[in-house]
Image (tube, rainbow, N blue to C red):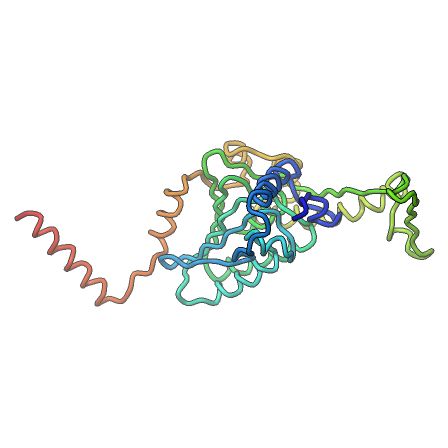
Length: 292
């Protein structure tokens, strides 16, 4: 299988991703490919499980709207998250949702729809984001809409912003051919030239428009003004656990065990009144036997 790189994965589109962390995720993925070769696809792309009345939805890997890579390696996609959250919100046997997050972010387009799906699900039942260890860029965009954000020890969040990589053919290819990008006369921004001031301005307008939606969503999700989010939430950088708590980007710190035990205790189904009475009687009998 061909080695996968970030630009290939995202197709050169605007990205809400922390590239440093994403390269680490891709390096691990490529090592797995070298070791295992062409493996069968994993079940992923928005799959979730229900335990003790709580739906646990993993948000892992480099995020895209939909991708064969995501299905193959069990990464989440925006489309999969939207579908799963709609299903979970309608389930009578689910009283809360956990977004179990470990992602550097991903494609900029599609992230807002996934974040909106979290917002809608949170209207029906509590949605908890548990970051272990990373929710950067588009992943934090999604997490910011949760009812509560908890960070594991050593976790980090942030990298709010949008970037892109723009190429321009300037050298002959292996066959000696030169390639030119030419847009129609009424669409100069279809192929903006990154070497010209006008081209850079066109690229920046697109990135700024995507970033405006990103920051507005984060500000609304965290209950702060846009100006506060811009100034206190890292300005594009990643914040450590202590910094994130101080800035208001997260609500608390918890180990994985502490977090899940707390959520399960708060939301596990209690059963019918007769069932509760039966459990209480069983407990009393066990205590009586212990005293004999």
